[in-house]
Length: 103
Image: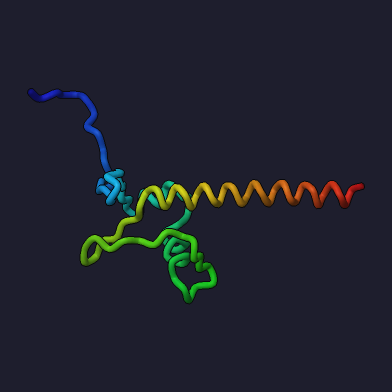
């Protein structure tokens, strides 16, 4: 049976399972770009130890072929959540500094 006119689901990640049988979704670079809002060069600079933009906490890519790499979705999500947490933590600490300066 062929359904015409219905959109086909798009899956850009690759599903795998870890030893606990939890689904691991592997993301392509374009998905990482979308989720992080970073540019391609920024992502690779964050992975490059020699770069001044190196970020040891940024998730490392996984080689899945000769010229293909992927990132684990949960690791990217955790990194983004940590950025948000640190940003909000810094906002609150700066608010305390500013209110103390005004007093």
